[in-house]
Length: 228
Image (cartoon, rainbow, N blue to C red; front, side):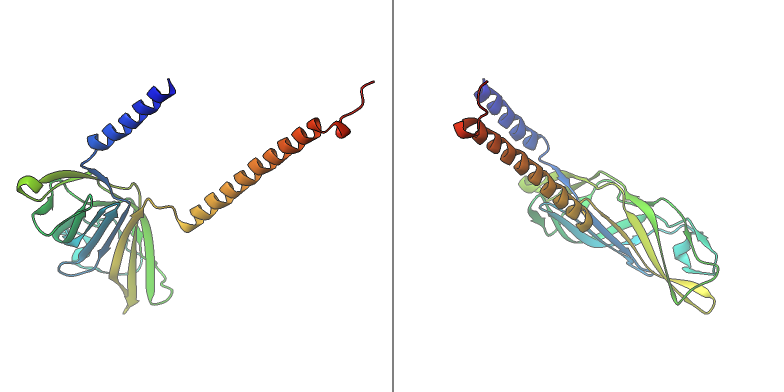
């Protein structure tokens, strides 16, 4: 019975891998925004997958990135969607594609908050971070002929968009913005996990030692209490 259960479990794992052969996890995203032409640089990475390139940020007529100079106290809410235009390097599922690669669905960052520039500046620079999230999943095509493949990239949830501003001449000048999200545990989280694991091992070891000591006492006739 146990042999049958193990065989069924192995088959389920193998079939699941084939069913999701064209779906890949993106575990870290970094998108940097500057002011000017080709002002977006992106890096998507995951197990066996790494996609880099440049793009732009589409600004509406009233978008803040059309004229990134603002007086103190300004509230910025219209960041504008990020567009992907050129791919420098594309590796998906362990296979590198020099050309014939692209997304068939949009890739954008939604900024969930407002950036408020201080009314009374302190220093020559100011940094503000707001929650943001990446759209997903993202679909695409790569290769041609027999090597043609369709894929889906699962994106991590959450993230932050941080901006840096230079203050001078009574106004703020936008310098750069960075969107970052990662599913890899942070060092602090890993430390807590290590501490918890160490405590669990200590408890298990202590219980095992106590059981061994009890078993030794029961088997030693000199340590057994005399019968009445």
